[in-house]
Length: 551
Image (cartoon, rainbow, N blue to C red; front, side, top):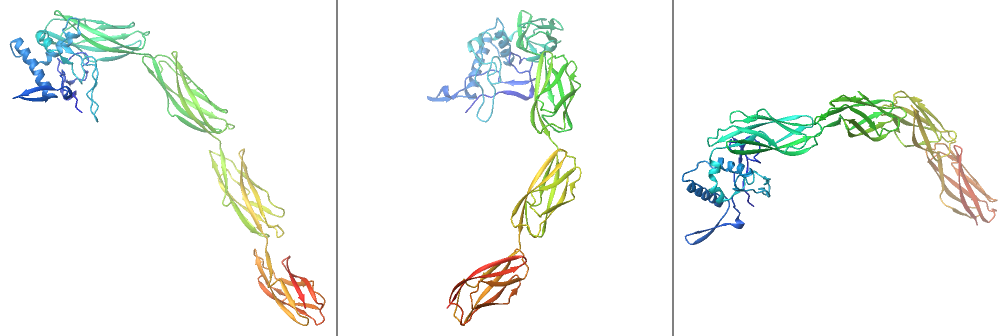
């Protein structure tokens, strides 16, 4: 993948003769000057000693141009020295009405290769193909047209911008060659309506540059046009184009921030800046739309004075009743028949607080107490005391906060102690703690599980057979549940006639066992009876049934 080279030197300054339409106004030597065919796809065919070779690139293009220059020397009858000044002289003549078409301008394509961006070919000189390729016949026969006394016109800029109602200046320099010494008269043409060109002197010499002042009337339409500067002298006419861009009056509107935050009951401020462009000269009035309910905006000052350069302070105030949320606002500046807008994001924060508990649930034994810790954190500038209350307490259960409220500004803790009665039924209760202050109410749900002390009563069997005149023991066991600590007294009922019962021991601790002995007299009634064994303690009774068969 090959391409021709091109670009601007970083070492050598631009020589005076390198002046033609399209030559960059960069002050540095630009290459190439001309282009010759060098593609391997359409190679130069060379026969050497009976063998055919295919040449391309510089190896073919440079000798090809050298052969043309050999014809120039032969036609002129002498060596011509540096060819470049003549090339550019011929190019400038070609672009005038009476110049020979020595160069074939290449106006499309580029010399980019993969990984490196080059230059695009275009009208006139470019850093991809220079002035273009040469017509050898015309170059040879018109060489003297460029080698005799000649001059070029060179503006210090190839393009210029001017605001409507104002002006800008360019400097025109004459470069003489071949002994050219005639004064050159300057004129300008191609100006659109509203554009005028005034020269500091109508006559240009190689020793004194001339300033060209390009002015645009206030009514000039915005756009770009080409003004042609023409120099006539010594029987020669040369031209130099300048692209003139008329910039319409305009202004920019810039806020110091794209977003702002304000708390309900307070205000915030940002700076709005305006800058005049393109000769804009008018005051700019400022306004704001899209404000949410409860928010107002004011500008200080309300407008930016003519010519439209300055700043204003935008203050946005939120009332205490303003709702929280994010709104998209439109900042608008209007002046000189123009309107410019900018979008702003406004976040309104309502002062509030968060209410949390150290635990969402707790378990307590009936007759006991448990403590929750409630924490409050002020948010968005909340500044108020918070009163605390609790609801959902079951009958016989009391609650107490210490302290009863959280002091201003709403940051702190309070211990909620919940005390149960011994008679509180064992189940899970839903409580709600409410915090109120500054017009804000928050709740925290709590779960309270009450457990009742109890015990279990079990028997060593469910059936007992006793022969008349005999006895049979059975074990009775108790196990404390939920912290039960009372002594338990045992009894039995439903004994048939002639059968007696005894416990050893008759009373025991919350966790223990006793031996129940059933004894049948010789005269006991034969049959089956259902007995009830009862354990009583701490206000609680538990029973178990026992089948007794007397044989």
